[in-house]
Image (cartoon, rainbow over all chains, first blue to last red; front, side, top):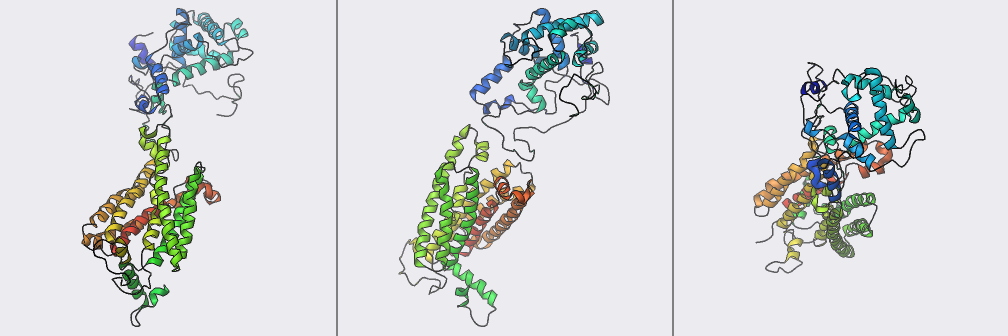
Length: 256
Length: 311
């Protein structure tokens, strides 16, 4: 899976030429923008927290080797980073692992959910069970399209296997947990802030151009470019939410 | 205008003689009453400005009431003095001195306020932009300065001409005498340099805050060094004081007036417009700030009309 040619297929493509976009250190619409370049304007504690986040990737301590491999493959499909230079990919699994190892929890739990630790361990079993039942391979060895299908079946709340696991754990709530953890890990990283043009810590400097949408002096102008999801991905398939699906987006009917 | 009309000759058209009479009066330091009135009226504007700015800051320190009270007092004594009252003149002088002291104190508190913002002087630009307006207290002192100068002048109907005969001429430097005779051009020119710097600096960072969204926001920033240069050059050069300084000053007054229009328009264009006028004046562009810039032009114009200090 890791060979260069397969990686290339996973990148977003230019919609006009169909050619995969080139690898970049910093994807997104804000070329040259760097939150870390603003670190002189943070207070010492903030700076140490964020530099630690960038420089000291936590080692895997909670997942075993197999679970780690499955989770890496899963997170690669939830938030694909194949357009990023490999040295600038955000280690999502390591942050989820750190949270589980240190048992940093929300402080509440749905009654139809086990603890976060148990949820991930059960889920890895479930990913594998679905992959084996449909494709007779480990999730890790499936191609991207098949992996997306497995994940989409969970997203849709009708996973074709591992029924006993989903009886112990709400499939919708697990999906929310997984996507929430991936997003939290990815978007707490300064490289993701650069990608989306987020200013990072606002203390103590703060913002001064608070009206009229004017950029701060240290921000850069947005430079948009066209792109499409890679052909093997299911993420570009349009699907109206709300009335169409009974389970997957509770409370979001007709809001999109 | 009655005090001018008394000296008008019978043949000359009224308006022309009035203008000449005013001009002569200013040249010769005989405009105490109009100066007192000008100080009193301009104090209304700076009082309103400081009133809502400090209101916005919640009057967190009781000393923030002092400029509001003093500007009201200055208006009162300015109007009083403009009626020609001797006691009013004395009160104007005292109030002006207190107000000037208050404005220097305000400068101290505003500098301290910037320093106390998170990051302090380590983040100078943002904290100057977002903190208390650094030079605003000095600009607030403009009307007090006018009042103080005015309190040393002769009344418009004072006897005598270019030279004040009521005071024995002291050789050497008697600044009171020179003020009385309108011989303080260099002094006002120097004040114009300082004040236009303060006002231009305020304009620069406030417009920078707004990212110079409108090109016209550059005009006070570009005009400031021109006015400063013209006023500074007026100190050694009589020609510049008489020919260049008035032109630049009039452009500055015009720019300040245009700015006042744009700031008022900016307030009206905010959501809620005039229905939420208090809120929109407080959070919109500072409505009277361009007039303070125009006041620097007025100072320059005053300097150009006055006579030069004797050698």
